[in-house]
Image (cartoon, rainbow, N blue to C red):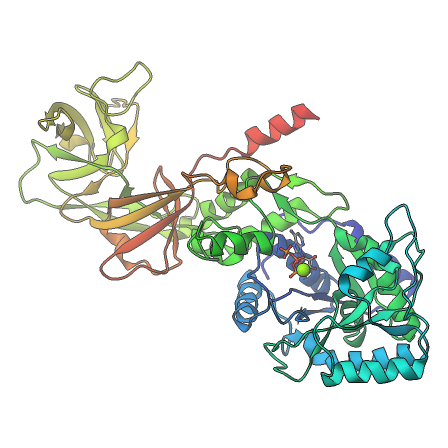
Amino acid sequence: MDSSGPATSRDFVREIIDEHAESNRFEGRVRTRFPPEPNGYLHIGHAKAVCLNFGIAEDYGGRCNLRFDDTNPTKEESKYVEGIIDDVRWLGFDWGDKALFASDYFDQMYTYALQLVRAGKAYVDDLTMDEIREYRGTLTTPGKNSPHRDRSAEENLDLFDRMKAGEFDDGARVLRAKIDMANPNILMRDPVMYRILKASHHRTGDSWCIYPLYDWAHGLGDSIEGVTHSVCSLEFEVHRPLYDWFLDALDIFHPQQIEFARLNISYTVLSKRRLLELVQGKHVDDWDDPRMPTLTGLRRRGFSARSIRNFCKRIGVAKFNSIIALELLEHCVRDDLNKTSPRFMGVLRPLRVVIENYPEGKTEELEAVNNPEDPDAGTRKVPFSKVLYIERDDFMEDPPRKFYRLSPGREVRLRYAYFITCKEVVKDDSGEVIEVVCTYDPATRGGDSPDGRKVKSTLHWVSAEHAFDAEVRLYDKLFTVENPDGQKDVDFKDFLNPNSLEILPACKVEPAARALQPFDRIQFERQGYFCVDPNTTDAKTIFNRTVSLRDTWAKIQKKQQSKK
Ligand code: ATP
Ligand code: MG
């Protein structure tokens, strides 16, 4: 792993681990896990958990398991398992021999459940899910015991066995822990451990028709794997007493659960359920749509794994929830791509320029710097000829006072090429400018004037004869408000930004960029960072804009500080 970016700071999770090292709680061992449910692809929030768990393992010379939490067969699929494996690898982490699955422990979990039943700590309940909810009580009133709570161990063993054998219908019975129906923590009021669900599982097929619930399964998985620190997000804080209760009741190896704040980012949603809704409702193309905050989407958009890891370092780990500005994520990718991506010239909205005094049929190869931030990146040749394209926005026939780019009579520099002066404008019948006629000064070859003459702007350009056509996709925020999911009584989809995608079908790109491959990341000078889309073919090249060049993070930071 590279060590760019600020060193990992001492967060409160690492402080707890340090204390455990000192008190020798786990004999100096550190084992973490990242436990995704394979019911969707990973998003940038998961990246925070991945970087934290795998990062801790690296820091302490321990290991981090990748464990799929596959206890809910109706929502889980193998395609998500494969996608998640790809995503974690792409982020740059490794989990040793193989991925693990909660379903690998179904037998062991069942054995543990029998142990609790025999000990009088679990019972089979015939109440329906609705009745269970009713009996549970509220935050202010205690719950009521189920009429089936005091069944004998023998009867419970028999019924549980028959549940497993498939004798009862879905929902007819459940296995519950016998804890305390008056406990102030509602989760402790005899939580359900197993439910009947006659559904095929993506790994265990039809072997099981009872499935464990999260609270029961999770701590067991951790214990079986010898996980020392079970790091999860804040919403599990109230589950911790239950996590501890199961492990204590079984008297087995007992990991420490530690909770941290989930990542939220402005102008997007970070929940697989919400993201699935966007995919199913065709609001985006798929999980890897470059507007999605998924890792596949970000990757296709042009984010590097390093930029995401750096972002996770920058935001740190805390115990209170907050919304991180999208601009910080964009700042992190700019920072990385600035150092690493080669520069090219591409004209997004082309305007034809004819150099009147340049010889017909002549081509010159001019030298251009590949990356001014990287002296090792070298130079390349860019062809120059009589007919060029410049950006439509870089010309105005009737410019306002502060417009310094090309206009009638004005001289500007073409990057790496020559000074040109606008002489004439050609319009079509509707009055739209379709061509600009210029002259060039041969003495300014390379873009410098020998007489020290100054020009106020430098434009990018391509040679019409040598450029190739490309489609460019520009992206904007997916939602129009900072917290689309936080508005009461309003569907988050109502805040979708109708202009989040703009397709420019007829862009012109310098020939050296022809050799680029899918996922290559570049800068088009003055236009931003771009990534070659995986759907690029020989016939059609597609570039996704990752971000523009304008970094608004500093401004946002100032605004945030003045609010405090
Ligand atoms: P989602 O709500 O997106 O479905 P989840 O928590 O249900 O998220 P899991 O697959 O269960 O998704 O999550 C795997 C791990 O990733 C968990 O430990 C969870 O705490 C963590 N995680 C999920 N979302 C975030 C987030 N936004 N920030 C930090 N960690 C997260
Ligand atoms: Mg979940």
